[in-house]
Image (tube, rainbow over all chains, first blue to last red; front, top):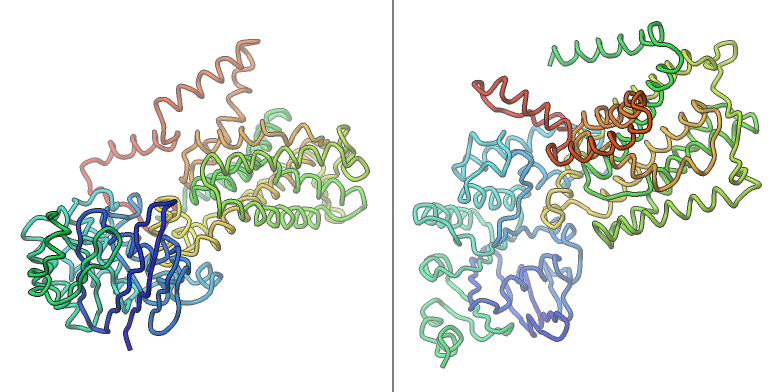
Length: 245
Length: 321
């Protein structure tokens, strides 16, 4: 059974349709790439899946459960985490606090979160993840003190905190220097080998080609192609979408 | 940490000793400041930590004041009235939290402003219960059998005890995961929701808890003055609380203390300047906001940072900053 099934997902902003009848499925353990020109609806797709936006029509099923139109926190608790194209952090909170927020609602009731203060396991996990991402030692700094690349890694780290089954990465390489890109690609491949499933929106074609075995192409809110990197590179529809006829 | 605890004990001992040295009027001003500290702690939780604007803090305060006044007339002990007032304020805080789930910023300001006006009109017109515009006089101060808090000095100590409860409980709440969730919502609401923080739960709680502190402050305010009328719970006073919290430093634990002190004491100090004092007061507020946008706590930070600029700039994560 597919981990994530998207069926005829549609999103209108007033009369503009940002997504129209997009369907795709993600298999467990997969590393799926989503590409397309600017404004093709990639981020809108992520927003509709994660509950940041409510889709106008269509369905999203995760592990067989219909999660269409659920609030973002519910979707997160079902096991879908994401990162953002424009980094989204809690700038005045420390790096460690940023990480801990991402897992503090995972267990217990609202009132147990008031009564139980210690989070030894979460703290250990957060520090281990920061170490893994190469930003250890910064945990007491406010997130806003981090460099752009470090913030990008923290954003990624937060997505890993709750041990999600599916991680949606929205342009993880945008604005990141070549060395860091190499590191990030390594991290994603390592995590994928450990069993994490990814959907990656990415403009850097080299990265997409090296990460993904399957790619979905969006253009003007519609799915125009799907296939292996080689198939996509030869698809005339894709070339049209990017370069025009 | 040990130094901090020692300082806390010193402040408490000094506060207990104040009635011995202060005359009646000064003691009244200090008592009023303590009541305002409780109220400002509530608004700081709602606005400073959780980032939800509320312009109806005086309305929540009124629930506390009228609960002790109305129940007191019927012979109910003060503490019962206080608990009822806090509960009613908490309940209405929850109700006001619902619009906060739909609207933000200045729109939320409008909603809460409207609520304050409604409460004021109800207080003025529901004469059989509230006494209308004449209000309720002779609001009784608490007494436990032979032990009475009727004198100004005893009542000051009584307020001090509740203020200690308010400060300690606020610290307890804000240093928990709730405090972290509140700050996360303030800093980036969308991100908070995407990492599983329920906006509904925490926004409702931020409003309700903030309102509960207002209820507690209001319950102590009524017997301190001995007389209440709807004029004490207008939008003006809500804005006064807003000023305290902003002046002190939004989202800073020390903020309400400094803010309440300045807003209460500064006009008293300036009273000597005759008719000019309102102008000087307003002008100094404008200047403070211009040059200290992070509040007076920001000034303290600056001094603290420059004094230890050579040591490591680590910040503590456990305490509610």
